[in-house]
Image (cartoon, rainbow, N blue to C red):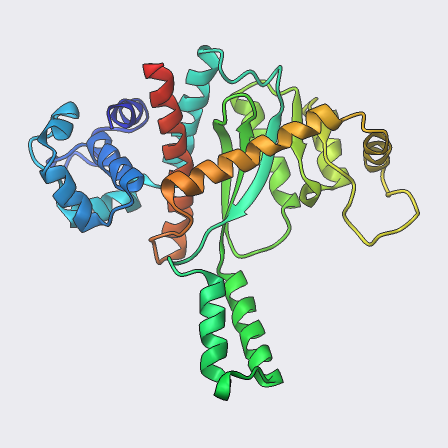
Length: 313
């Protein structure tokens, strides 16, 4: 909580307006929201939890716990793209100064993950739907079509978080949020640009979902970053891939020249696992804009836990 408060004091103003009530500062409310996220509580449960923790409140100069409605409104004010990206800037700079980022030695790893829209799994919903539609427990063709249509509807509204992390310390350096499925490839360029702006990057590693000649050309010619992506997009064929860099990747992967570097891609799976194990795999927000803010907020909270471990270790 103290780490979140210190981060917010460097990235946020005290108040949104000089005409506000000024009962709580934005850094104090941000620290309370971080506690809510790490403890996996609702706004009402967070209010009760903080009310019973006066020592925690004293650490951030609070005399009383914020009301649950205040926390709800604060989430919409604080969890915006501009403010959370500012916090990612500060966190990357902190780890760079502590010589923990080491993106000149180990690669930047890129991947994406999906979150559940609610706490029930999609498999559970699909099975319940099929059992309810099919009399006697038998699956008819009409039932399958209905289940497939429901699945397609769920995919169009599925929250997606794309991130770029440091393989050396698991810090999230850049993140993007979407609602719905789709190709991973368009996220490669903005993620790499954001990470390159925050720290020097010598290599970027991603899976075949990011395979694209344009992505290689951007990384190697414009940003001077070595890109390692297997050329597996498209139908299976004996012909070499189109594009100079994709053919180059195919030749190097065939003789396992990039195997040690590409092996570091597993570190981004570790980051995704840490996010879901520590903060949950389902979102609490209902609106699209708040779901996007919640996913980016979780990336910042993940970095805060690493920062706290860095400060105490």
